[in-house]
Length: 444
Image (cartoon, rainbow, N blue to C red; front, top):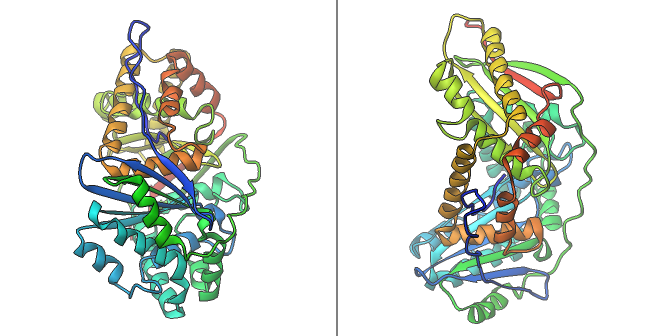
């Protein structure tokens, strides 16, 4: 999936864009913590973004959901921060914070006025160094219940929600790190003990397994001294062990369906595709946008606007570090057709449009529209310091180079319309994919 991108109008007559320059200072503390600093003095704010190189892919079968559970525990207090004070201190200073867990990483951020950076550094260093001082079985039980409720709301009781759990289970074997959902399985969450959780923290929440990226209004030399002060008492620990990834391939059409308490059926077409930043990843970003990126895209225009047979349609290259998925999702409009027949009709039309793209490259106008949209996404992301800090961390995690902006741009600028058709032919074969349907459950 596209992280940060600047695109330019296609055409040999146009001059090259000005190079993107995001200057940074990077250093590593004695305990192994890597720090990336980028000064932006446009407004007096700063963002402290901490990436721990641990996600659901680092879990084991029978012990799923720990990465996400720990995201919740990290806000419950630490050795020198009472429960509730993490948010109280930040709100009093005019700051905010949040976090997210994915397959590959756990990402925490604190946004503050620049005169409160010390507060953010104190909070982050204290929970890294002293979180286990306050973790109790009661705390684990409390956050376990919160995570279970989140799973119920986001998956079990959400329309079409369990499709997001079932599809990866079909695509990946049980020993593959992407087989289980990020939120984990209920039985694993129930079985997790406080000691299990503490062991997980000791393995993955270490300075050498974390990167702190800070962007905003500060002096880097002065801030380095403050970082060294706050994180000096954090003890070193191991780096995350490498993840073993078994080979995975779709060799035929896999068909499966499930029922849900929904009014309309839904079809998911999914292919296994190249991992993030590898050849084919950028091409498939563009393929997704040509097919369903906006109201003038091919699938949206034909299915939703012209034929009026679909409520909505989307396409996306879901890029991840160990492998990706390309998915087309479509929901039909109410009709007299049986649900299976309605989905078969939509699938036929989608396959027609896919074949057209494979046979005939996108037009210059389509390529221009897609590139303009990607450029807009990039600039929106980079307007604020929290976007800058997160992107520096993201690039460093994926490439080893925080300032990978120009290289990322080059991935897209180098693409021709023929490359897009070639990628569709290579990665989206009609005879090697998952065709997953959600059908309305019978009314009681």
